[in-house]
Amino acid sequence: MKRRSTISPRRAAAAAVLTLAMSVGAGTVAARTGRPPRAAAVAPAAASLPPAAGDERRQSQYDPAATRPAQAPATEGDEDPAAPRKIRAMTDRELTGARQVAADFAVAYATYSYDEPPEDAAARVEKWATKEMADQLRRNTGGAAGRETLTERQQVAVATAETVSVQRIDGAAVELLVVVDQEVTWTEGTQHRWPSYLIRVTRDADGWRVAALQP
Image 1 (cartoon, rainbow, N blue to C red):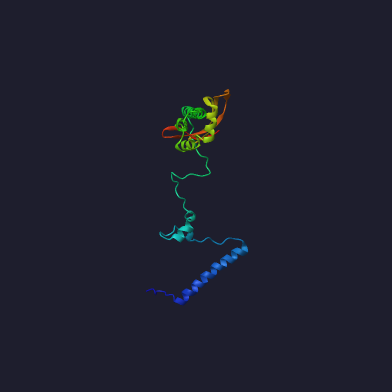
Image 2 (image 1 turned 135 degrees about the horizontal axis):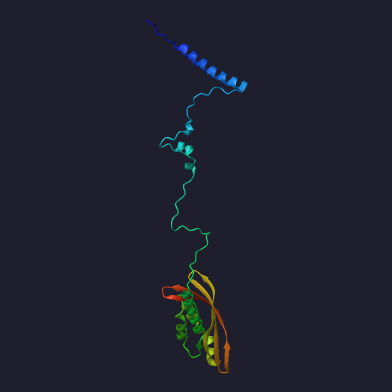
């Protein structure tokens, strides 16, 4: 009958130390001779293993994308202030309407009579204007000094539109230069004048309206 061999703990420890010494020695020999030591099986690196679920710190190290700040999704209302503003092109019909309103306003503005009440003069012009422009016209129409001069000279002016040209289109507004042929009659005779007006028209629910006037 064979007797079982037993290894004492002291001999096991000595064997482990001998194995470690042989490994170090193999590395030393490789360094001196230039020959690589015999390859040994190596366990996969821990960094190549996927992180455990719920470990945020390890997730950050494992996936570089996890360290980048998340970008907020673009919303429909977001706009780049530096981007050029998109302006809808106006149709020929829209521009024709803007020209007509500017011309009618200029003709009404340049037509007057010394015996016309200031309220009637303002009402005749303001129907082409925005509310703000109409209020301004009412404040500026019928000045005492101007009315006195017209009455003394019995001055009357009748205007017709000469030319209407588009100067600028800005979104829903158009600036136009209107030149009128104005026939002025007073006690000393008749004279033709050609005043020009820079008129800005805008659109509202009722159509085009004059928003500004620069003689």
